[in-house]
Length: 156
Image 1 (cartoon, one colour):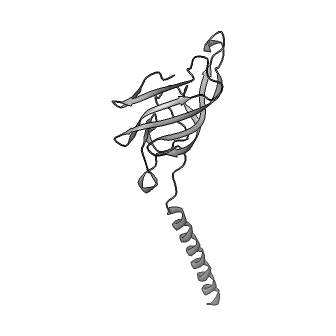
Image 2: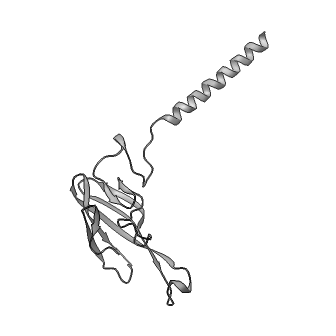
Image 3: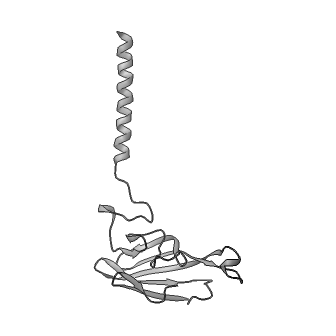
């Protein structure tokens, strides 16, 4: 009888520990960088892009292309009526023989970004600005505008 009581106590303790783990796992957590936040974690204007509407994305591709021109490794310093951040501008460049002669080379350029002009809860202006080196084809900075569900302007 004593052995049964000890075993039951052990099973009960294990059950309580498992229940505590489930409760902790179910507790709300902050959104991962780059994910679309929902509920009370999401605050401020949204940024429309290839991954839908998001708050403080860690990567950003406004035109949903092959990934060339995406801003990656984004870190936001402000997020309000204006959002400012820094990241790397992702480019792929083919050799002299074009991409047929071999895979493209990935080059990352430091870039500063600013999202502004909030309309209907979404940013409608996005500025790219290269503080140092830039792709040969790119201007030092440029702005694209969001309207009608897509971005317009010189975009890569």
